[in-house]
Image 1: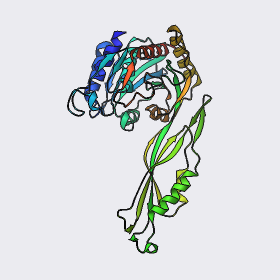
Image 2 (image 1 turned 180 degrees about the vertical axis):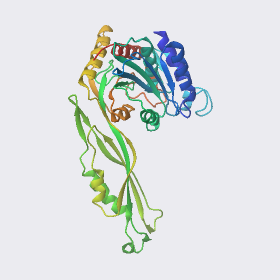
Image 3 (image 1 turned 90 degrees about the vertical axis):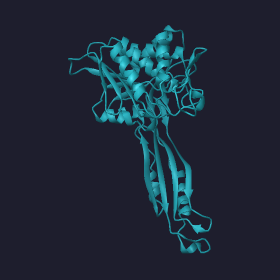
Image 4 (image 1 turned 30 degrees about the vertical axis):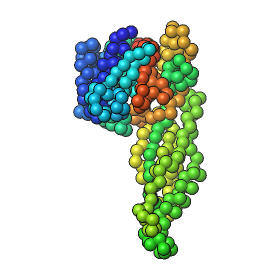
Length: 372
């Protein structure tokens, strides 16, 4: 399917790590030229389109969702000095190489073509959304939700390939969230020759670290799949010079959250005098709450794999947070299904398989045309 590979290459070539405008322009222009959909471009640069069930107020809306921002490229991934200039795109050995090929302009192209080609059943409105700012905390998705974007169901086209076994594209029914927080231990400065005259913030930080280590990591079960969270101290910063008792020490915590549960970091903070807890980022987890939707998506994926002579995919859990978390938090039943394989995103050799993109296109189109 050369059209899919060509569209992927054209999107990957457009720089979008600092400014997503040009990539959004290209997506909007393609949708207006290739479809009769109602296309919108919002104030932050999200591109959203709708087709089908225009006169049915009770229509169920299924959205195919991606994002067109990327992380900064490596020098080898651009045609200019440093990370400036057009992105380098290469096609070889059945794969497309370039920044954003896997995360996630390849799957985005598959969504665009599936949105164009699918004929949704009666009572179904089909939506397409490409968000900005996914890599910096989901700013585009959050803006769209605030402005009323509220599909009943969504397939978020982040990576789910090679999770259960090599050579398959699975359907993720849940993913972890990420809460980044800081425990701030406060003390009283004094000369280090008289430590009893002060209150050592580093000691207080050490005590609260011990309290954090006693906490249980969160855990949940979704469709029989175990979602295990984690909790780790990743940085400690305290003191200013060798001969002064430190009056401040900061402890950074990375927590992977799960649907419906979180570690009780607040309890650890309260257990030590002079310690405050600050949440720096909180990306929500996702769990699909609609059995019929999850089963329909897996059936579609299995049919496509069977037609291609591939092993059957399964329901899996994804370890990384995505925009599905924001949508799920707002009430949308979400799944994650996409072409990116573990170890491809954000690397200087990032690539995606053309055959996997074609597989994803067929899964999206099949599901979009199916009642569930």
